[in-house]
Image (tube, rainbow, N blue to C red; front, side):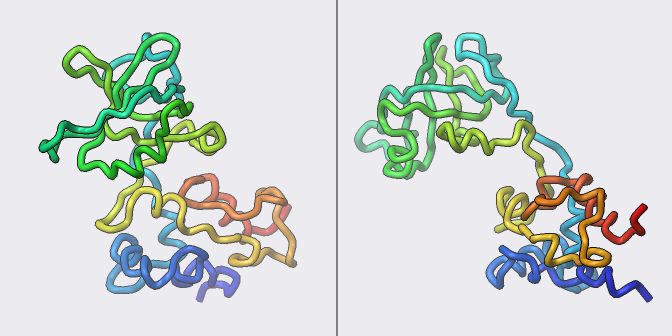
Length: 222
């Protein structure tokens, strides 16, 4: 029989903050086994199978085509589709000091795009740079960020196995347990392997490092 100290690892995933009745069935489908609901230990072991490197930050003139880049640009113009061509994309012209580029949005919510990319605003864009008809373009940028949001962009973004209805951001950030309260420590103290002041963390972002930190809570202290 397992020690009672390990019980929180085998608790339902719904005991974690951010996993409510709306998303619980989706996590069960992704992580559950043999008809049982997903458990905390399941999400700890749900590791990335790849990653997107967002560290390349060139000027547009020097940016390589076919690669994911992260660039700082100024919004120059909005280019709505011609009248009567409802399937044509909405385009946004952006530039830096060296070149310009078009952002291409199909089935666009024009109001939302205009809010995210107001004329004259400075934004950071992250996505794959392509060449089409002699023009630089980025189709549906992965990220559209201001300076404050850029600080939260991970240099390498993990790619996790998903299921329908459960997108990358939900899998990567939604379960955010406070490990001090959800997983007890020996004698009520923090082990040396997990820094004090760590606060709420996402196991989906930390991967193997958080798994080691969690399990080392249950080992005798030196």
